[in-house]
Image (tube, rainbow, N blue to C red; front, side, top):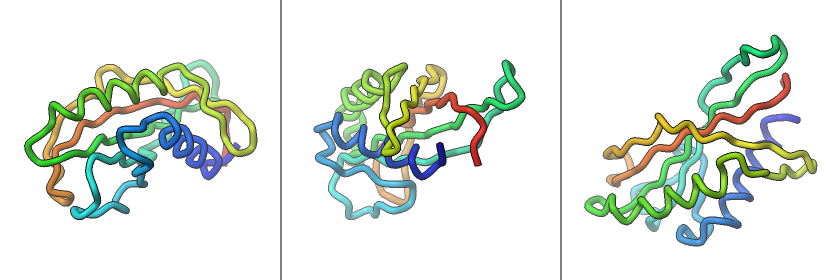
Length: 133
């Protein structure tokens, strides 16, 4: 399984299951301040080795729920939906493999996203995976 398949699977899963953003799911730094809000941004952060096996690892995925400047409260239902459709749920990749993201409960925080002139909520998921390159 390679990162491109994982990215496509996650993108397709969010587009299909988060109707509030009407398909507006972007990879980090590809949306602009003019992009219609709300929308989602995703980024792979870093790999984390598994303590259970030297060949296993977790892929860290950050999902940002981005909305209007003064309306962070409107983003909470979207963030909650993302957690419900992603946490320990099967996500199919284009090569028909299943990944199962795990929500990191200590990862949620609100912030001001200056580049996009927007309020945002950050969510982090860890994706268990075998060694891949």
